[in-house]
Image 1 (cartoon, rainbow, N blue to C red):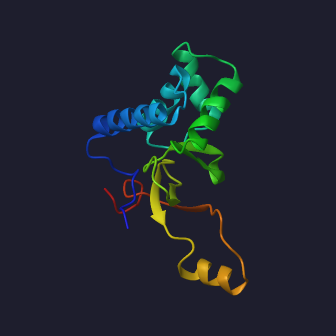
Image 2 (spheres, helix red, strand yellow; image 1 turned 90 degrees about the horizontal axis):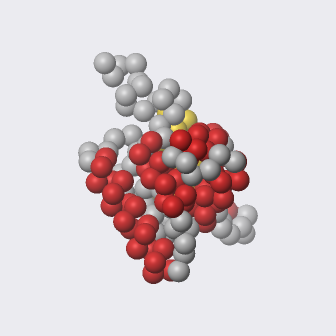
Image 3 (cartoon, rainbow, N blue to C red; image 1 turned 45 degrees about the vertical axis):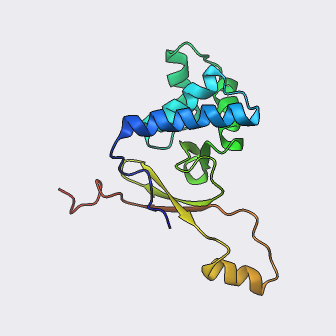
Length: 160
């Protein structure tokens, strides 16, 4: 299972550059339109490494001259989520860049209640206790949202 991504990034610049290049290539291959607003929204989410609300994103976009009305941010976020480039963090009503864009995965989100950083970990919801309970009930899992709140390594009291 891949390591969680989000609390630490060894080469943040390469992370942002590589992910943007991958998004551009995937959009070109699949006939998706990565408009300047959508691209900048993804870049902002990648650079922040924490969950951002739509209005937080809108403030960044407005500073860049890319719009100041809420639909600008919501449309960009909707595209990014549908394309698999971002995830919505339900507990925070906020968004993060996907750590595994283009990969078929079932992420779990580790949310730091101290600094609001979010790490994405890959899970297998059809396995384990949830999968067992679903099978016992004759239920087929199609989508899960797993979000855990706690403290990241930097916010833990013994991390001095």
